[in-house]
Length: 166
Image (cartoon, rainbow, N blue to C red; front, top):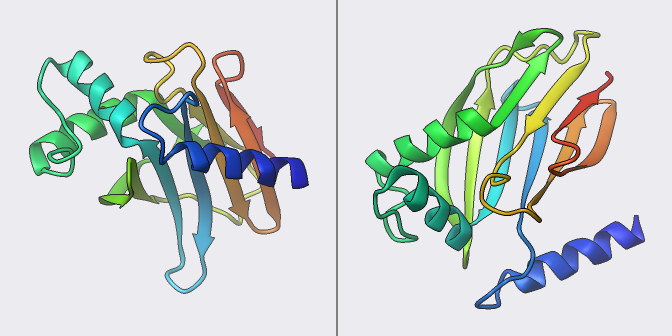
């Protein structure tokens, strides 16, 4: 655990540098007792994401305009192609709650996970290939926090999915 915390400190310290050598997203899947809903939150390096979306969609997407409605739609289109979550064999849909700048060069996106049954004994499979098509050294971290299960998983081009056993 100490090694992982050190890793996160190093990762986020690079977030403030002009050019960051690490290519990654961080995320969290969790259940909010007060709202009685499951959520997914993903953090991107804004510069990497906007450059990649501009290359894919041939439309200038910048840090200043990524949260505008038309560009949000392009982002969500990309996201749905690169991130999936399954409850057993059933794909879970998700609804965007917000897309916002969380910090310098960090874009945060929050989704409501629709109809994810946390009382089910089904396995939950997450496929996370976000930004793998942009960088060979891309990796993605997900903190999975659905009681009683807590797990931190690193996704990579050689390990693009993980099955969480409830």
